[in-house]
Amino acid sequence: MLDSSPDTFITLKADSFGRILLVDGEHGRFVRRDLGATPLWLRLPAWWLARREARALARLDGMEATPRLLGWDGRWLDRSYMEGAAMYQRPPRGDLAYFRAARRLLQRVHRQGIAHNDLAKEANWLVREDGSPALIDFQLAVCGNPRSRWMRLLAREDLRHLLKHKRMYCGAALTPVERRLLKRHSWVRELWFATGKPVYRFVTRRILHWEDNEGQGPKP
Image (tube, rainbow, N blue to C red; front, side):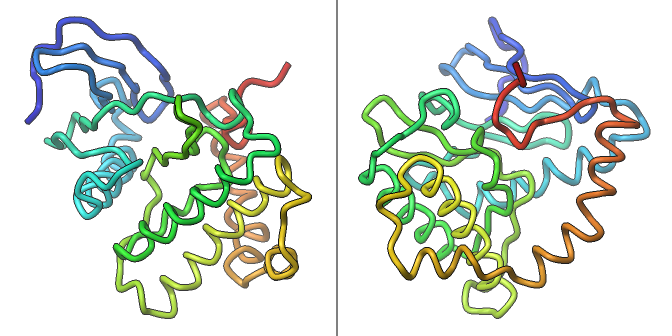
């Protein structure tokens, strides 16, 4: 249920697509995606992204290590708060247990018919207090039949992004099969790098004047 009058809040992030607020409300702490401050010309894509996230979270239905959807009314998307640090803030160097748990988590998400589609960003992987993984930010998630060819392809891309992080922080533990998977580039990736990514960079850097640095935090 949406809390229409939160007691206190902290702005975690603000850009052209709205604000992300950490809210202490009547029923406890939660995270709100607020589209109210979005410029008129960006409200439709901002609404579309938030709707995708709401749909994915509703399908996950409070799965362990993923946010729980608390409410979505077209302007505010509220989800449960998850304690933890982004992967780039608390790197799981040499932590094979983390990456094994992360792969199991990703498999559970995929079995629900959800491909996250944005796991190259370290900010979307949390390292919780007990060292276990969690996933956030399902704005680009795709929902569908987990057995379909398209969803299996997207699931493989999710896994490749996880393995890239494993190569960075726990490279010695990569298996031969994982190394082969990292070398296999799907047509989806090639199409994105050839067409979508240049457009994305032009829009975000030249028009919106912001850069997410692939979710790895601010550049020094």
